[in-house]
Length: 535
Image (tube, rainbow, N blue to C red; front, top):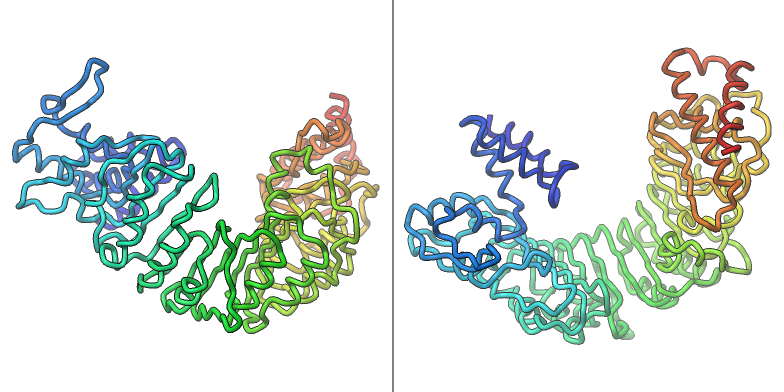
């Protein structure tokens, strides 16, 4: 019974109307409903409190000391029953955050670090500690008492470099093999600037000593650190961010990574990425290569050709020029496109060996040119493909995918996401045969349409509604100032027509048994289309 209730209440830890993913109000109400609900509801309520000051608010008002602004600035000595009350909540906590966003004052940590001797550690279920220090100007209180063999997940999200907390952070990371030997997940990242000068050497020395480590996210390690970490049998997930200094490579460096499932690397350019991947003794089943400079076509083809072929069971491949990804938020930047040869089927030839490929994400400034025959070849080479994204966030210019190519993808692959822009500029009139030989996709939620003008919005809406049967499916409309108004209106008219088709489907269960649809249907859709375009 308790297990069932715990599973049900766990859904309230990820509700929509929540703070940090926890629906506190609903869980508190459930805890007061009946005795059967009380314990599992309280467990769910306090498991992920993140903000330690919430614990203090659970104490009686009579023990709290407030200033003139009604802020709690202290706690008088607690009686045994008050300690018990505090422990009844703290003993359920699994995650704690030390953050500049909701600062934890010294008196709170001092209180929690000094319980009565017979009570022991206040957080017996604590497993995860998050430290957020993005500004670097707020000196954190002493929180090291929270560390111990019970911690299996430690995450640092840092920003300004240097930070007033650097000495403490450095000392804690260096002490992890002795203080937290059971860590499985370690993250030390800088979100604003490059890693601190001390970071690479300290993490390179520490990480190899964590023999239970399964996930590591950190700056690029030095040669010693890479060699030693690659020998960790437990390591399954590794993300290496670009550091101030590049990885120094020795002539005989080889990185084993016998059980690594995912490798993510960020470097300055694709040439350095190629050199790094050539040091891998075994290619992991999933890898992501992010670069800060736009790769040339020869560099991209060299990377695909030179990555190791010692593991053909690769499932996920991602190559991203990070500025191209950012340009989705700065559309004017996407006007400055690459001028030169396009990516063709030849570029993807080395990847065709990965017959188990499930996800492909290429985001660069180089245009991509694939014929319908090319789409057919790739979809047959990767029959397990479920997610394909080719320049999805850099869609200015001609579309990659024709309507025929789209039908080929639907027919040959069970896709969950399509990130290829559709070129519907030459689409006029419905085909006589049923689209995609009757195959349809009921999962894909959206499809990007390039900024070319849609030849016939009514025809496109019928084809898309037939090929994509998810009720929420809609073409993606990007309303940027540089987008021609005519294009926007054509795209919104397609979305409006698809909504009308869904209504027709609901009213007539046999709607799709006849192809092409009757003139009455076409006339209704034309009226909707013209109304949207005239807006």
